[in-house]
Amino acid sequence: MWKRLLVLLLLVPLADGLFLVFVAGQIGWQLTVALVVLTALLGMLLVRAEGRHTLRKIQTDLTHGDIPTDRIIDGGFLLVAGAFLLTPGLITDTLGFLLAFPVTRAVFRKAAKRWVITPYVDKQTGGLASGNVYTFGFPNPGDIGGGSSASPGDSGGTGDTYRMDSDAYDIDFDDESDEKGNP
Image 1 (cartoon, rainbow, N blue to C red):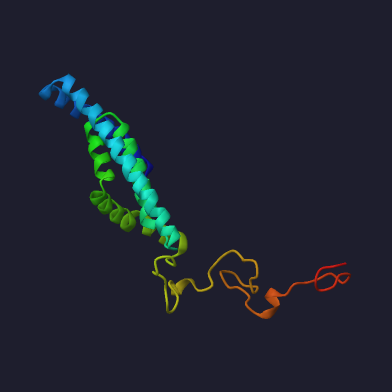
Image 2: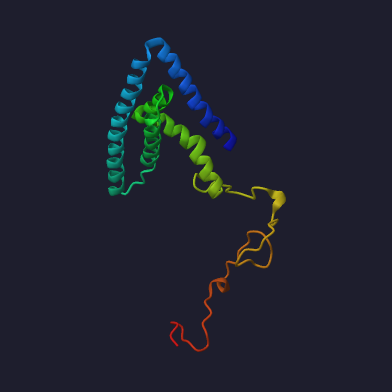
């Protein structure tokens, strides 16, 4: 994954530079520089306005007791859009505008939730957060009790077996103190 990211970080500026040279050859370098500066300025104004709107929506969601997950993802995309729009180049400006407009940002948000966020959360929680958990039987019948490290509160075996009887939750007090912990 890191190699792909490194290749992407090297290819995007190269493609951006080559496209700028191509556009400068078509319309002239003065208009190309003006176009890059204009897209950066307009993009920053758009990102600023969308950022304020997103913050208001987050505050509204929080006051109503809702969890603003989509708004937080939008805020992250707006940060990336701002970085793309400040980077000189027409390809990065196009990506920045796509992330800044609410209609196209919703498409990116759905894709990120489906292919990035949900798989990561499922991996971290064992499927509990998205509801993709085993509800009957064992997920891997060949590995019943096959864990190698004992957990605190283990019943003497290995794996993820925990003691759930009443002795597992008893608090031992010293003989010299009463039940409240006073000497």
